[in-house]
Length: 287
Image 1 (tube, rainbow, N blue to C red):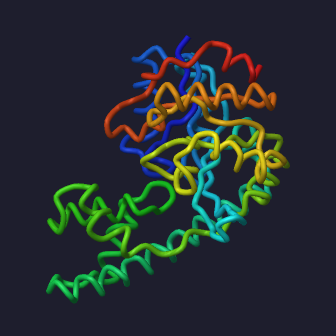
Image 2 (image 1 turned 45 degrees about the horizontal axis):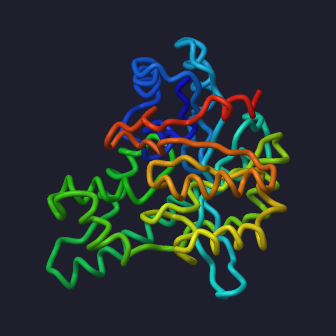
């Protein structure tokens, strides 16, 4: 059985392919169970359910929420991601909050463009205007994110690729994300009948506990001390988790009788869908 419970689309957030092509690719790859987990967006979940049925693929509703986690020992806010599964897509409280976050993302993008213009002035590059913002917005099918700005920087010939866009501009010119707390994320998902899972906690290249500590034991101590009451599980299998990290989080989840999930975190750049060896019993947890 092939399982992938962490996939992004162009339709909902920052994937490279529209949702129809994602499902066609999943069918081509013989994936049996998937979840579309677009960033802060559940707008295409109804379509995902219909497409899963059409292609004969089992489906679990999904979303990836960015959380501003307050780490008391360092007295700092850390950006972390959490996956919501099996929630009711019609839940009004969840839909309203995600609409608010979507609008906030647009305002954040405007602030990032203002920050970019400060850098452009230093380098003698022509400033971005309202017209540029409109063009970037036109490229967004789902929720607005920095990858959309990165694509536009490439299109304008200012950078050669996304890595350069982030390294040279988008990290420096960032603006604060929506301040969603872990407690609120937990309430939203659980109140909609779902489960909240800590996404890629050991990803050394991404939004993870690595920003607090690289030590796996210390990472799980942070979860034990500050998160257990809010989460239902951890993402053990992930493209950026090595064997040691996966084994550590499986052992941790078993110790606390938590859900264990896994997914490629595929944005179709490159196509990673269904490439992880996730055991069949992961699917059985949801039945």
